[in-house]
Length: 175
Image 1 (spheres, helix red, strand yellow):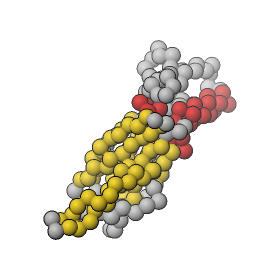
Image 2 (cartoon, rainbow, N blue to C red; image 1 turned 90 degrees about the vertical axis):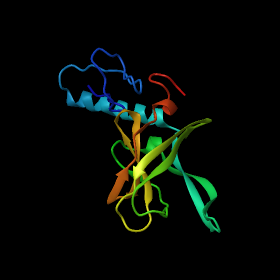
Image 3 (cartoon, rainbow, N blue to C red; image 1 turned 45 degrees about the horizontal axis):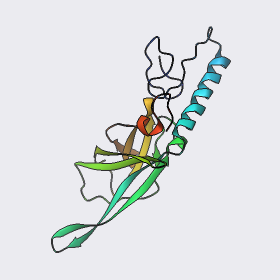
Image 4 (cartoon, helix red, strand yellow; image 1 turned 45 degrees about the vertical axis):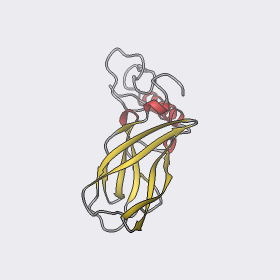
């Protein structure tokens, strides 16, 4: 069975989702209006759970020195507000990022922040086979999991998976 909020898997006999805490609501029959109302409540609950969470990456700037490339600056770049993400739909940051290499794997240093709590991840991702600069995106998946995307809307690679459940609050709990 899937959670009506985060789409995570719920085993039989559970009263609420172990990932997000949304209650298991039993219906009688296949009343489509009742099912759609439960789905809407789930979407609203998920948005509330994700409210105030900013997701972004650390961007690094380099300069050429006598010894080669040298780190010159770092900056946080917000990619999306978690509550605005639609599960399964990529969202892209508006900035271009120059590539140092044409192929191989890089690490995206991602973060999620809510109030004074921050969770960070180092996410390996293969460089996409596109020409020019890359864009960074994010996709929210089932179970409050996400993946950072590298490339553009027509061709991209996906990072390793990360979970927002800790920053969103433990199942049934509040941050």
